[in-house]
Image: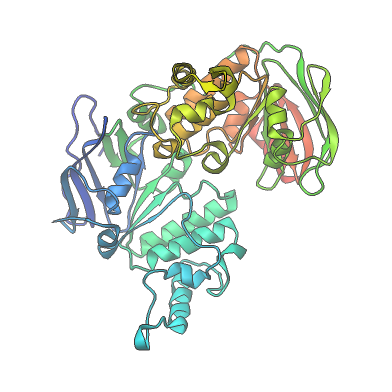
Amino acid sequence: MLKHAETSVPSGPATDAQSVLALRGITKTFPGVKALSEVALELIPGKVTALIGENGAGKSTVVKILTGIYQPDGGDILVDGAPTVFATPQAAADNGVTAIHQETVLFDELSVAENIFLGHAPRGAFGLIDRKAMRAAAREILDSIGAAIDPDHKLKDLGIASKHLVAIARALSIDARVVIMDEPTAALSHKEIEELYALVDTLKAQGKAILFISHKFDEIFRIADNFTVFRDGQLIGHGAIADVTEADLVRMMVGRDISQIFPKRASSLGDVVLRVTGYAHPTEFDDISFELRRGEILGFYGLVGAGRSEFMQALFGITRAMAGRVEIDGAPVKIGSAADAVSHGIVYVPEDRGKQGAILDLPIFQNVTLPSLGRISGKGFLKLAEEFKLAREYTERLDLRAASLDTPVGNLSGGNQQKVVIAKWLATQPKVIILDEPTKGVDIGSKAAVHEFMAELAARGLAVIMVSSEIPEVLGMSDRAIVMREGRMVAELPKAELAPETLVRHAAGI
């Protein structure tokens, strides 16, 4: 039965004799921020519980409490109904709690077996690692999850999906009773996602209690049995997934209805601002040609490996094209570096914001102003007041949520990190902005905000290139879409011809 409260914090589901792990009245406060306020959560063997909420809702804090990284300021952690303290990550592991994160924390130069048993390898005489026993145990765990991976292979030789399976095998090597999956499908293809679903079914059949964190509602309704919704550090609702609709969850997540994730806008296209002709790279893409007008959102769609990101990185000067011509406002320009691209008014928000988009150890305001230092300095000195003013202007426009602009970007949620990267480039006042998977790993509320802002940018005359693997996003936001396959443009579709079947057919070569 659905439990939902807007004016008071629900106490959570009643303690169930079947629950393996439960939280009751958990509170956690950081300087200037109350991350959690008396939240509750219950995990049941053989069931998947989806933890849902916007970025900054408290999901990551709960995961760190469940894995012993943080200790709560108040409330109880119950294991099999008995109060327990997870003073360290090892204490959580000893109680059968393990987590599989969006970005796998593994070691490329070690073998699969070594990664699985790192820190708790079986040992033989004189305390030496028993490598034969380790390989055999690794093979047994891999077989149990249907992973046809050689335990002796180096991790660096595996693909992303196989690395995820190794991470899952590592989690299971501690005889886990609770498996936390944090955005596990973010880097997987459609086929690999289906394989992950089958693996979740296997884990359920083994009696594992699974906490599944995802921003994708199709995944939640596909595999979850129960749900718990957080908003602003509070428990808003919980119940059986069968008792709610997508609209119900959205309303609980954001406190309002989002009837239109993709804002309606009247397209008013201006002159051609960017013209690309015959752009080619020796190995990644070939013969890319198109025009982009002021006020236009041009979508780029394709399957994994289509060459979209590789082309965008070349257009931004990160890599070098072998051939081709670029014109800005009708004049040819040479782009040999990212600095060249920025000077000509082209900016790029990358897909991998953590590695390519931001300096995680620096505070928000320094990340935002980094490409615009010339505007906020004089006689060789930075004007701190101007720097904060510029950072505040663009972070407020994107509704960035943080305790202060001094907060290190690495401390922000994924969606807020994305907003910092977008703000950084908007502050340069570009002519063309390339958004590579702009809402990847972003919750539905923040996704709507990014879409709304994207529409606002186009309305102001900025030319937008949007690379996206999400068909609804391409359909909802694009004035026109280009489909790529195996490094080539295979279709250029006007708004009237955009349809899911059409995009997939061209992308798959059907």
